[in-house]
Structure formats: C-alpha cells, structure tokens
Length: 526
Image 1 (spheres, one colour):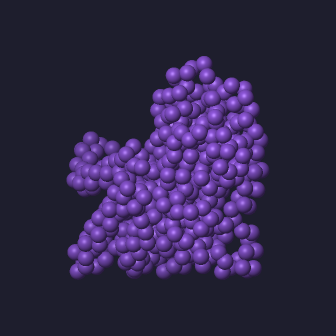
Image 2 (cartoon, helix red, strand yellow; image 1 turned 90 degrees about the vertical axis):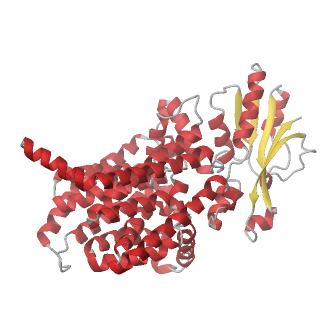
Image 3 (cartoon, one colour; image 1 turned 90 degrees about the horizontal axis):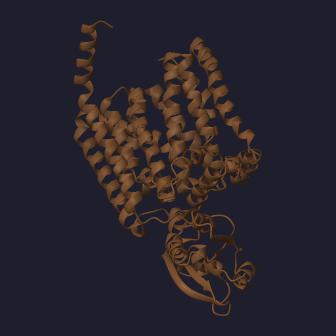
C-alpha cells in the first residue's frame, strides 16, 4: 500500500472508529471489573461442580498420567487443562478458576461486539450488544464461577463469527479457524454437539439469496468448506481417545438426556415444565426488560435484516428447544451459551424507528439499571438476590453449596502449622463433590492432612474415623445437617463450629424433609 494511501486509511479509520473503540474499551473494562468484584468481594460459596473441576485441575497438574482424569466422570477436560497452568501454591485455587471464567467472559463480550457488527453493520447496535452482555445478571453470575460454561460460551461465539466469515468469504483458511473453535468447544462440554448440528443449517441459511431462494453454487461451496471444519474439530475431539475412559462420555450423556424417541413418546413432559423454567430464568436473570427489547429487536431484524435474523434465531431456538425437550437435568447455566445470540438480536431495538429513539434509549437505561441492581445483590447480598428457585436451591441452600469449607480448611491448616508432627484425618459426607473435593482443593499443600469420604446418612461414627482415632490421629468430621442422622453426642463428636446456609425456599422437598435451614457442621472426634 502506498504511503499516502496508508496515511489516508489510518486517518479515516481513526476518525470513524476512535469513539467506538473508546466506548468498547470502557464497556469491556466495566464488564471485567464487575466480574472481578464479584469474585474477590462477593459472598457466593463454592459450588459442587466448581470443587470437582478445580480439584481435578490440581490432581492433573500434580500427576501427568492423570491429564484425562475428567473422563472418569464423562466430562471433557479443556477447562481443567487451561486451569492447571494458573494454579499456584500461594493463591486461592477457587479464585484462580473463577478468574479464568471471567477472562473467558471478557473474550465473549468482545466477540459479541464483533458478531453483532458483522451481522447488522451498525456500530451502535454492536456497542449496545456488548453493553447488554456486560451487565446482564445471568452472564455476571456464571462468568464469575469456576465452571466450564463460560468457556463453552466463548467458543460458541467465536465459532459463529468464523463460520459466518466462512460463508461470506468462502475461504478455506477461515473455515479451518472455525474448525479449531468448534474442536475447542467439543473438548469443553457435550452441548457443543449443537454447534455441529447448526453448521449445515447455517450454511443453508447463508446460501439463501435476497429473495430467500436457494443459491445452489454457494450452498455447494459452503458444504465443501464444512468438511475441513468437521475434520479439524473432530480430529481435536478424538484426542480424548488417548484417555482410558473415553467411552464414559457417551454413557454419562445418556444420564442427562432422554432418547430421540422421547419426541413422539412423551413430548409434553418435561418440555412444558422446562419452558416455564426458561421463562423464569430469563425474567429474573435476563433480566425481565430483556423480554421487551428482544421482541422489538426481533421486529427490526425481520424487517431490515431478514437473513442474519433467521440465522441467529436458529442458533437461539434450536438449542433451547432441544434442551427443553430432551434434558433430564436442566439449569440456567445450560442456556448461557445461547444468551450472547439473544443479546445480539435484542440490540437491534436501539434502531427501532427514528421517532422512537428516545424510548429506545430509555429502555436501554432501564435494562442497565435493573441489571446493576441485581448485580449489586449478587455481589454484596446474594441471599437477597432474585435467583430462580432451582438456582437458589443449588447454589445457596443445599449440600451443593459449600458454606464453611474454606473456614474449616483454614482451621485445619492452622492446627497443622501449630502441630507439624500430628497427622490429621478429616471425614466428609460422600466420596465426590462439594465437601471432599472442596476440602482437598484447599488442603492440597498439606500432606499430613488426609480427607476421606465416609458415606451418607451417618447414624454412627464411621469405621474409618474410629480406626483413625485409635491410631492416634487428630480426627474430624465435616458434614451437612441433612446427612447427619445420628446424635453427635452419642457418636462421640465434639462440636467445633457450624456454618448455617440461607433459609430454604418454603415448599421445596428439602424444606419439608429437613426443615427451614441446612447447616454444615464441623466436629472433632473425642
């Protein structure tokens, strides 16, 4: 490029994009800070899956032969592979995992700006999409947890971007890049299968002409370029065959989804129930203003951007329909990877007719304010946050919420530091999950402290703890009240501390069976 042409290009780019880039930087900064504040200041306890994933990463880092350890539970290991390199002995491992998710959230936020601009060619729309994502409570909540869902969401957005660029340019190199993003998604979580299914669907929609008629040559080229995408993606996925439990991915997936025949054998159950849950999640964590701006955005999209709107609508509706129809277990984080596409389409409301511009800006302000109010509660008073019942139960009220784990671990570490020659044995309910993995991830640098699972429904002092006490070890038990059936006094337990959880939701089965509050108890064996 000649020197004068280059100067002209830089000048034009600066004039056209400088304000946009400054605003985008501010949005991304606010987004990242919001998630970091929730991580470092927030009151959310460790969740069961967070404890499992972070503990896996610790073990995989310590023992190279166990790099495929998540396959033992039918899970893909990419998130743990990345987290391994971030774990340091002097740094809280849970925070490391949560910060990693926040970084992925930042890439998602930038990706949604690119995605919205590619689809709709409006800087204002792209900035609005990024702004919506940055403050939406559902994204703030899950982007600050050490779960694989933030990673999957990032890879979904960037796979969509490069798949769309492939359809626009018909270039082999672009299709190959999209294949790497799809491969990363397949190495992260099984719902990435949706992206595989959506690939040919996207190619068909992308090949439609202006009058929505098939363009056979473009369709043929798109299908040809799908081949390297799938070859690269599934070539990456098949790396997992190096692990000894690759087959468990399929068997564990069967535990979470109904067979295909469910569509014609019993389509109403749990489809209708799941649709009601979807509505609740979006209304409370979307938050509710999203419903109205999404409808307005859809109207604008169908009028002005028909083909991009059809494309992005398929990416929203197909996963939601399949989840609602086939998922045995369905929670709000399972729709996180859909939300960037919802927000991108919703952002079109900002250009909803010139005479309604003031109303559009007012609705955007209302969305941001309502989101920030919920975000404030999620950070500083999570017990009062408007979480859907299913989410509140899992993350705050029941055995999956790890209240007291870090405090109990700190007590044990302090005792060990004061008595370095003493061996400590800690019994926990279950053998896998919140308590055993949660304690182990905080005690991984203390080889003198052993954490052992002792089962559920404890009526008498478990045999392992009896033998530990006889051997002269300092012995403890950490257990949730719903799993403690016997009387601590008659079991020979001395109370050390208790960590009550938020009050249960009235009417739930756990409330009926176990009372208004779950408590994590910390006992010493006498």
